[in-house]
Length: 320
Ligand code: VTB
Image (tube, rainbow, N blue to C red; front, top):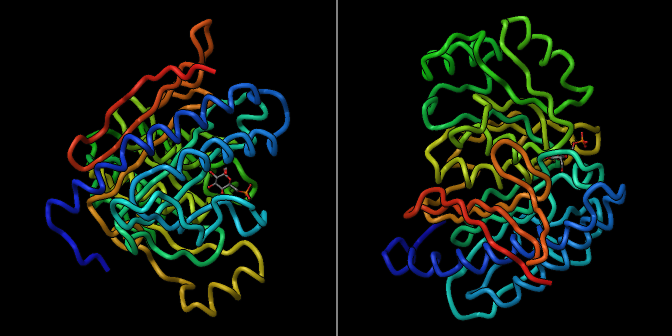
């Protein structure tokens, strides 16, 4: 529970913004030489190393609450790892050093480096690996209900935005589990933007003007859900989630924790208004261009989202 809400708390959180931006930026630059090289492990490793090195110097005391998956036995940036140099805020950190490792390895659009921070104990402690999610931008705040059929959600979102259902563009991960969802969305006349991976980016595209997505729907990673929620909350969009176990083992884990069937409102996923969200493009997409290189170095485009500044787009050059 957040106990400190005064201005100085916000200031201390704000002191994290630029160091976190640096960490995401440098990680994206380090991924450049792995774009399209077919090696997602090496790409991820490059991002993790760069991000980890930067995070040791950020102000304050952070605890990684969402990190490199338990699935992977990650040696760095695992959940529970403490980071920061100690002088500054106590914060939760959620990281996905390279979100869309496969996209990067194949040279497909949508890979990003991403981190989110918020006052300590304000990101949801997530049990399980998968989450069903609905994400919309500010215009459709209050229009979603993850317990209702997708068609009803689309009708409400379209009405809130002021367009026809058949004009909606809905982002869905192109996975076999979504065959029915995709067919039902298309049956309404709306478009489905099928993305091979990377639903944090899809969420971001639903939030930012020009992102080209009105609604992001379907089952993706639970950790990615919390990271997305931080951005959604800061930008005034809306999101709901629900555990969606994909194996018997995961179902048992979620059931034992009493979370099966639970609906996470946006506030449950990301409780504080003082969060910070940073993403840097690795392979470009509509909402965020990817890294390019010139004789001056690696050119990285990022978004930095904070309560006070809203969304800032920042271009940086990283020299070797
Ligand atoms: C999800 C999604 C991610 O990987 O975690 C997905 O949230 C994994 O889904 O954005 P599968 O196990 O079904 O492949 C991403 O797409 C990329 O990390």
